[in-house]
Image (cartoon, rainbow, N blue to C red):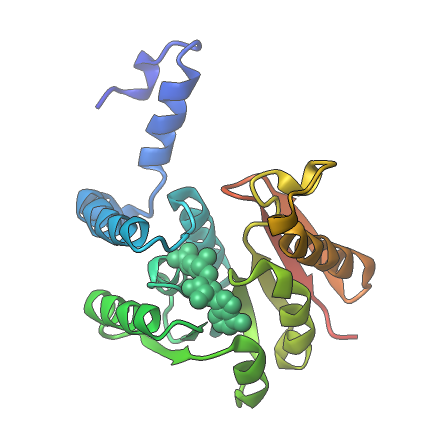
Length: 229
Ligand SMILES: C[S@@+](CC[C@H](N)C(=O)[O-])C[C@H]1O[C@@H](n2cnc3c(N)ncnc32)[C@H](O)[C@@H]1O
């Protein structure tokens, strides 16, 4: 690979790709090729099974937030086959991860994948409806990643409120929903998803309990800090 000084200013695309490649925690650089291969396998499997998953940039964003904040209790709503779970769990030290998904096959796959990759980390995967399971959980969370049914986003955040530590971060994916939330016309099929996302955005921005930031990463990400009054 080239040295950074060898790029011309016009080679923005190449420079972006270079920085993306270099953007990795020190200890992992030597394992980067291995990690890429591992993730590519799961991405291929997800594409084959038509499971929509986050892109790697979003994954790196989650990884960075976990690295910087050191969460003690992570909850993922919609863990799919474990691709996004990988980035959330990777920097977990003495913390605990709980992943929920409606689809049993995906949950089993996620559990197998994470156990093989991180045998010493503390985690559990639950099959079922997050709206039913969350109130039954016996502990609170300081980091939540929402990536499930878009029309249910407002219900997830409302269900979560008694389960959040003060200062908890709630990260939600698909906030721009392929830029469809900015369009005037909506096809019928997307109506409920778009309504759900807009209501979620309104909820996290209207309330004094939340401070929210929006990032043009992947399909649009919101990061919300919850402060218990
Ligand atoms: C976009 S996929 C998750 C992909 C995963 N986060 C990733 O990026 O690797 C959405 C998942 O949410 C799950 N889901 C939808 N509604 C749910 C609910 N109410 N409770 C739990 N899981 C749900 C679906 O079964 C699906 O696997």
